[in-house]
Length: 90
Image (cartoon, rainbow, N blue to C red; front, side):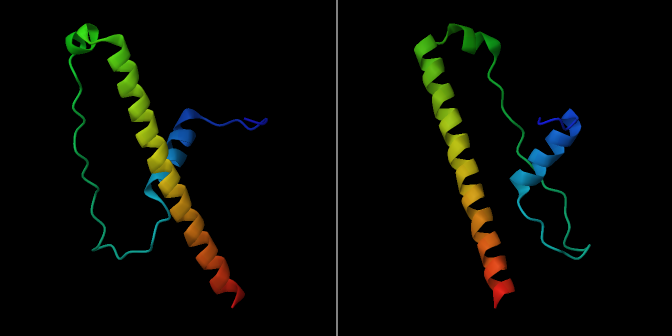
């Protein structure tokens, strides 16, 4: 990474912060742990018997959904940055 030494934990933490977006200040009473739905894994036997083209199609759809979500988050982050810069220039 361009001569910079970065650990896997640092990269993971950065990705997590990017997914959450810009943190807003909240009082301690407003802070509650995020509750996530547990992921449901398909049994390996179902994956082994599936048609390979179907598996590829599912993978492509999954990657497209992830890319769309990341694009939305980036656009929203850019909007927020523009708003902050516009407010600073007023």
